[in-house]
Length: 304
Length: 128
Image (cartoon, rainbow over all chains, first blue to last red; front, side, top):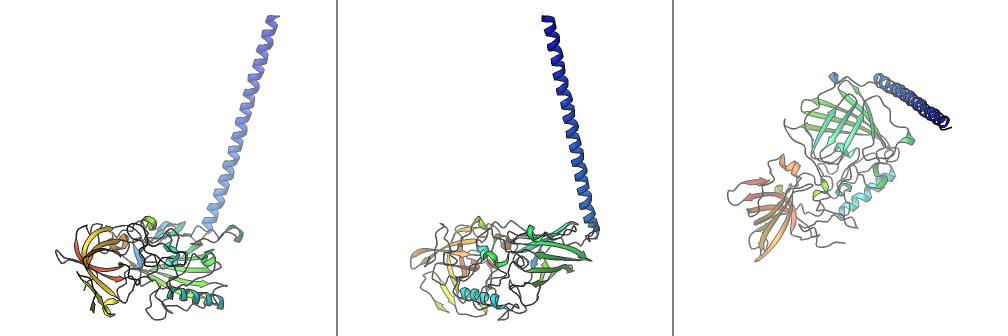
């Protein structure tokens, strides 16, 4: 009796182990099959992406221009120097304005900003440290720039920021309208035409949240603006960005702007710009830009 | 030009060529500064804050026998370092003459234009 029981137990144990073994083997086979199919799918996806990129117009690394170095925008930060009044007026000074082909709605809004500037109540959104300048203002900044060119993307890095404009040149298209949203720098895709990077920017948030301006005269654009920028090195010392801006809400016609950037001496450094490190200029509830003393308390005679 | 009451030295220059002085763009509106005035002070450096977004120079000035601390705002350390400044350009105890666009509301603060060190006569910023 005991012997029969032992045999039954032995057989049961063997069957159990065998079953587990088979199950484990089956599981491994299944995992392996899944892995294989995942790998195949990934390879197929990679191949598709590669094929898409291959079909794009991006240049091989050896054909890309040398935009190395540190660059500084030439001139003051008035965005449209061709139309600014008074001539040589400085962005932020009372009464200084430009003349984009504004719609009535945006002309009225611009005039309100100009009036607030006269009252000292038009704070620059970037005074709240950490707010990016947004496109196209990012092409119109003091301090310095770097242009990092790779076959898949060109990166416009601004010292005064935080800003990075990523221009993808791997053949991708803009995301579908339902897959994008307004961001400060927008979404940019481009291609090379010889030594010129031509890129289109959409989904820059503009004035939708009232935290992006184009310059300190109070210029604004809407979140529907569309930008075509042609960026190239016109000589060893000069980069140039030619922009054509269309905006069905803000502009009655195309607005053309050219910015140039001068190369600084070899070995020039760009540095961190940690704006929040020691920001002694907070904004009051009325929009006045305050000044803090070294103890962190406002020193303005009047604080609202 | 007219002298102010400051016992050491404080001069207000009338508008003129000297006054096209605004330094590189700040990270904020410059509405609080009076570009039409240039004040010159003599005093002692208390501290230089070499930090972003602006370098601040704290200067103690004897005004009518009373020490008054002025806060002078300059550009970013990034841009100033590319224009001959160092993080120790101003040291506590340095005797200086400084020029600035003052705040409109009379607060002892302003936008730095230039400085002259009293010990060796060297200048930094714009000093003509």
